[in-house]
Length: 262
Image (tube, rainbow, N blue to C red; front, side, top):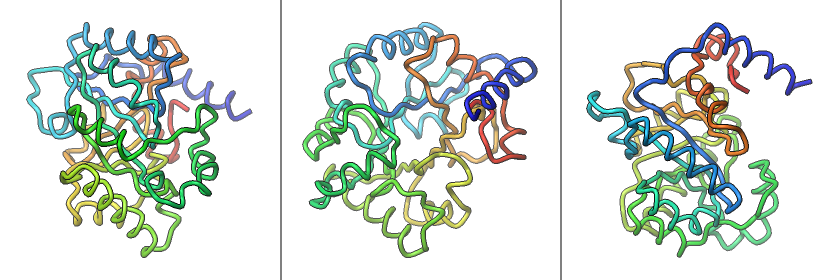
C-alpha cells in the first residue's frame, strides 16, 4: 500500500511539476557493490556527457554559475567504496563520503547487525575499516561526517546527539589528519533534524550540511550551507532517475514533511 501511494504521488508530480534538469545536481548513493558498477558508470558518463562537472561540497555551494555542477556523494560505511576506487579513477571523478564512525570502534563487533539494521541494508554487511578510509582520503576524495552510530538525531537528548556528532568528527579528523568540515545528517529528511542541530553543526565548524530530501534540486534557499541531495537508484533506468532530479517537490515536502518522490 505504501509503495502504491508513493508511486501515485510521484506520477502526479511527473505530470504537473516536471521541469528541466537544473544546472546544479546533487546525488547520493549508499553501498556500491560490483554488480552495480555498470549502472553507476553509465549514470556518471551520461551526466558528464551532459556537461556536468563533478565538484566537491564547497565548489558545489560556492562555485561559478558558468558551469553545470554535479555533487556525487555516499552515505554510511561500506567496504564496497574502497573496492570501487579504481572505478572512480577510471571515470575521473572525486566523490564525497559521509562516514559513520561506529565501525572504527572496538564495540562494533557486537553492534554490527544492529548498525546495518538501522540502515535497512540487506546487501553485504562489511563496513569500512580505518585503513580503507585513509586510502579513500589519500586518493583525493572528500571525507564528511554522518554521525557516529546512525541514529535519528532529532529523537535523541541533546547530550547524546552532541556526542554522536562531535565524537564522529573527532575520530575522522584523527584518522585522516585533516579538518572535517562537511556533514550529512542520518535519514536525510527534515523531520529527522532540527534547527538546534543545524545551529550546532555551524557552531562546531561544519561549512556545509547535506540533506537527503528528494525533489529539492530546484530549491534556492539562499543558504549556501545546505546541499539538497536526491538518491540515485542503481536498479532503475537512467531516465527514471533523471525524472526524480527534475521533479519539483518543494511545496509537497514543506506541507507534508514527506518526499514527493518516495
